[in-house]
Amino acid sequence: MSASSRAAPPLGSAAPVVRLTGVGYEINGRSVFDGLDVVIERGKVTAIMGPSGTGKTTLLRLITGQVRPSRGRVEVNGEDVGALDTDSLYRLRRGMGMLFQNGALLTDLDVYENVAFPVREHTRLPEPLVSRLVLMKLQAVGLRGAARLMPAELSGGMARRVALARAIVMDPQILIYDEPFAGLDPIALGVVLRLIRETNDALGLTSIVVSHDVREISLLADRAYLLSGGSVAAAGTPTELADDSSPIVRQFMDGLADGPVHFHYPAPDYAAQLLDAEVPV
Amino acid sequence: MSLVSEVVDNGRAVLVKSGSFTLFSLRLLRVTPAALRRTRLVVDQVYNTGALSLVIIMLSGLFVGMVLGLQGYDLLQRFGSTESLGVAAGLALLKELGPVVTALLFAGRAGTALTSEIGLMGATDQLSAMEMMAVDPVRRVCAPRFLGGVIAMPLLAGIFSMVGIFGAQLVGVTLMGVDAGQFWSQMRGAVELRDVNQGILKSCVFGLACSAIAVYEGYHAAPTAEGVGRATTRTVVSSSVAVLVLDYMLTAVLL
Image 1 (cartoon, helix red, strand yellow):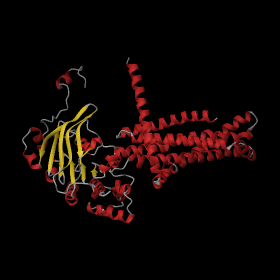
Image 2: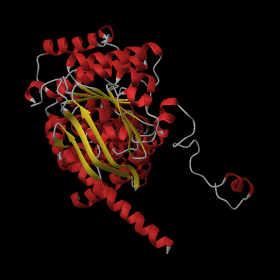
Image 3: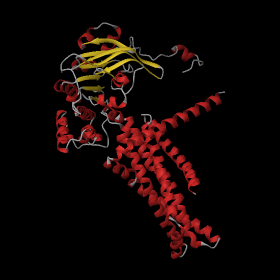
Image 4: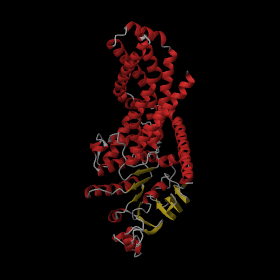
């Protein structure tokens, strides 16, 4: 169960943990990715950004093996995720932690049991040890005092912190965050931001953060990818992206309503649709 | 032409669904032995599906038995054999009404609860979160619920029949004046162990079918409010039809 049993390059080395090469993916005949190349380096916080609907969450699902690519190769720690059977995939996932946008806490278990859940499922540790492990992780996210609260009693920010404690309780190598800042108040946002950075550095993790919050990503990420039109539109440090002059990067970073990503969804001619009853809605 | 293609499409959809259900059931059966070792999880589900259905089962059993008492008395009176009311009520409840009505009520109460619970877990990413924690949701969530339903159904059917017989006795003996000795002694003489076993076998088969349908529909529900609602409806409809079809098949084989 322990991270020590997994062969991994030394911490801090820049060897890629995740590598997507020429990845193509379609949903119901609609192309989401076409020739996507992404490299996530060990020990760093890498952000995946992009306008809504560009497939950021789908990218995470490809990395975690929840969906398989139509073309190309997705490698995690050198293993081809698309070629793994269920057992191998589950073995691989034991080295990953994922934080869902809404926390995805198990609603019939309290905070303590939610954090203890992966430990109880994968190990036969004695209860005093489980208890110490859970309390240490809850202390790390500042919610040791909320151990006996039910998920329905938590605020959005608290739920995400509990989910973070649950995600790190098995000491994963890779931590994946899906929209961790969505819907948080400034205080909770600051807490989550600090926790992601501190968790990554203190535990020597590799973090992948999917977000479209430019300000937060520029504060947090070591490297960022901007996705658009099914491939990588730009990549680099947040500073490099901020200085990039390409139209799609400028539209995204400056929050412009129109540009390469159009304000209007494709539609028939406006005047023709208003004046001619024959043009269908 | 469009009618033909529609029929073909519907036929294909039914085949795909049947295949999907069969594969899911096999997967469920494969992980069930492992789930049996998690006694606590199974006991919790027996409580959820069984104990929490007790009130509706007992109330329905009582009234079904009372109606059986009234109708049976009215019918038997025409042949001058009202003392056979105990036999009629006993056999009808143990062999037929107990298992069937319990299964229909189970589908409406416990089956819908199972489907909506698992469906909502899917809609709120709880099942995906389990998969990401390398925990198989079919083993951890579906199998204990399936087992809980399978264990609870025969127990509920037995309680339904017992309360139903009491209801028939209440009406037949207390209200209509059938002799209590005749009511019970004739029942004891005519109802054989084979009849009881038949009812138990039926309720076990119904338990398997209703529980498998409920967890299948929940697990495959579209992750939206509408999707969960539709899945819940499908659970009731599919379970009810399955129970009635299986009842005919089992009766034909067992008689």
